[in-house]
Image (cartoon, rainbow, N blue to C red; front, side, top):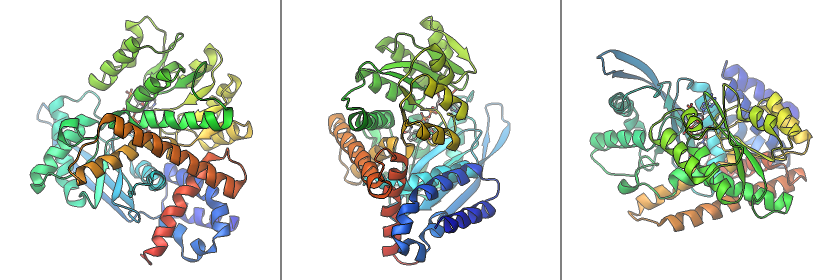
Length: 454
Ligand code: NDP
């Protein structure tokens, strides 16, 4: 079996040269689903793995736009429609200079299993552009979004592919993208999620990923630490974008002490934890003004460590119980894992996608640190996006309380699925990474088999 998976992995590397993030994501899934493949030879016979690592469709296009000085710029746009077996393709759009096919394929691949875990019929996809929104004017952002949608519109639809936001794509960008789509097709339809609340968006969507990951964390505490809340626990959070903002808010509400927040320029240390005043400033500066976190630190006379990661600062400043990465991929490397372990971390909950490198994961697991994997823990965002699709399809509206209740119950179900699969196939209920991969995989694989050979 190991040989079959190893050979498959070699083929993936050979066929997708240089795509290291994609290789990393595939390897993680292949390694953890081995017991399922062993017990169900049908998956191997039907070549499900060979099929599932190949995107159903990859769209790559030119995006040309004009800046405020009349200069013309050319960016590259992408949409990777990875797997549509269980529902319309669904996944975010990322605008960031680091975007390339490898990153989008890793994200699209992960999205297949994450979406399956939510229990809502959604396939996996991801897209975006290497466009850098930092420092661009409002009009430049709008012109870029219009040009991006001029090509994307022909590939998407409410029953085909429903993109959402991700890094660099928030409600503002979704607005420009949606407006352009609507003009082009002359239909109001739920083709994008993360819309404004007055025009088809769902309550709790901005909060969903951060809140959802915190609900998942609470389930981890209940099951493994016999604790119902975060009282007395110190939590190191990275990032200060959408996920970090609402994770830090919910962690604080549930009694935890958030000791760090960060952005790409450095880390802010919070010796007394977060309060409403600081949170409002973070939200104002990062979400509304798209400024620097250092401005918040300066305003409240807090220490800001330039170019330092949250893990280093939290570990240096004292003990820390939980690491909650909410910024970007591979942000916890082996040396960070070692520091966090020495500082007392026993749980890691992944708010960002693939934030922990494979050697860091190995080090954590060898030392009994339990990891709540992104695929499961950060599925709250896409779950509420699925609820947004349902509301749009029915032309209806659910209250914030109703959506939050649904989100909570979805996160509890996801956690239970991870534990069930981990127990059934690995005899280790703490192996939530394997549980999440297996739970998502089985659902999609069975659907693919039932739908025939394609
Ligand atoms: P945002 O763009 O709102 O925030 C990203 C944050 O991470 C910012 O604070 C940014 O700093 C920081 N950051 C980005 N790149 C780096 C880097 N290379 N080094 C250090 N810090 C960095 O994105 P989100 O909060 O929406 O997303 C964060 C993560 O969560 C991503 O991995 C995303 O894929 C994942 N995710 C998000 C979901 C959502 O609903 N929002 C759903 C599921 C997953 P700066 O402001 O300086 O750029």
